[in-house]
Length: 210
Image (cartoon, rainbow, N blue to C red; front, side, top):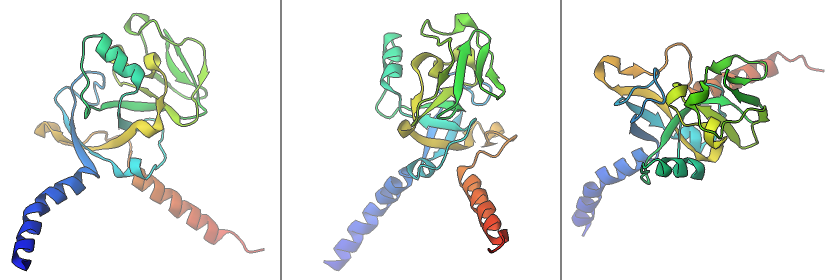
């Protein structure tokens, strides 16, 4: 009986390893030009899911994969497209809860921050928000890097944080561009939290005793 049990366990172990691995990382292929020039059609990226499961804080300019909200699903289906149960979208976090966002023909901007990108009036839907709006709690305002080809929060509104499932780590394909997706800044949430912890620890150690 023991050898039979061992054989069954060994036979199932690759399946278990695959299942466990899928809970922490996934590979995604980019199907559209909404993230040009950061990610091109056909790029394959590896994304980690742990930071989303741990609810590590998001920062502006983070890239995120998310399950589509109902409004986005309706827009895709209304345009003749289809969304599978495993399909995910990727955008960049432009504004966090409490930020004031204004969308107009001149661009998307946040109070006391740089312009995130130029938006042509003809490139966005009639639902375009013109007046300043505050990003609600529990949501973020997301944009595609290629505004003219992206259907994002300008059209369907802020994204619920709970819908964010993963963050891209590295580009796997094509081989000539494999490696870091962005080289100008470190978007690693684990390193950011470790740096914050070290800073708070240093401050506590240096704080004079009463």
